[in-house]
Image 1 (cartoon, rainbow over the protein chains, first blue to last red):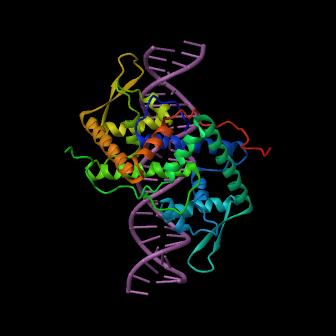
Image 2: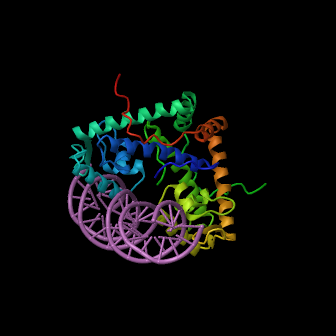
Image 3: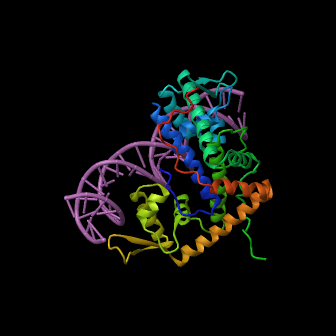
Length: 156
Length: 156
DNA sequence: CCAATGTCAGCATAACTGACATCA
DNA sequence: CTGATGTCAGTTGTGCTGACATTG
């Protein structure tokens, strides 16, 4: 869970994982230090994918990339912690709508502030222009992951 | 698990997670398509952290950031699959050394080829210069994650 | 005596699949 | 009738902590 210094990792996937963990470890640590000791990774993920007008559990599941069952289990925990409510969707009697509570909104605001601060801290360490280039690369359209069975360079 | 198109994710942590999953999903899918159906995320992580002269389990645990017990559990699976061997360390009778088998070395070579191909594919999609900038940003020294309880911008 | 390594046992988290009722 | 949504039940993968013997 801690971010250690590692000799060299030329593999882009590994570099991305370590960068993610840098943010995630710091976010979780600061949340806990600020009294949000109940926060977990799945909770943050759900908050990160919430849409302004309220989101459907099944839509969240698709966008995050997990099963409907997994999302509902996590959402039920969040209801118990008074972070969200599951209101019935007025437009569709099958569905529910995920809406953050007052407490949930405070959590979201705190998380956003922490993340913004982390990005500033990173800019101070590696340069604002480098962080901007990182953002630009990550916000580009990567398309869907190439999961097709294309042979990886059959030596021509 | 699939990489879906998501409206907008301004949060750097989330962007990094999605980028990692882009690589990881594609790597796993191609490994399975090539007959390496037994590969899992933890196996790839261990292979990614192996040092040339052989690595100690406890060192791997520290660098990857998991417990010694977790590493040993995964290593034992890899031994059963003939991917590595756990040889006694000649310099320290307590320790063992993780050494890839013939089969493990073939796996590593295949994984490297896939990852290199994925990076080429990404360059074709978002530009070689953008990928170079991404690499540069990720290879910079981010330092340890700021897990200290520093208040995140106490509005001056 | 102290620290590091590996190991055994028990447990927690967070996902999965299958099956099913309800509703668009 | 088909497809989407939520839900119940059971299972799996991957990690954790505590406790311990062995060795440096």
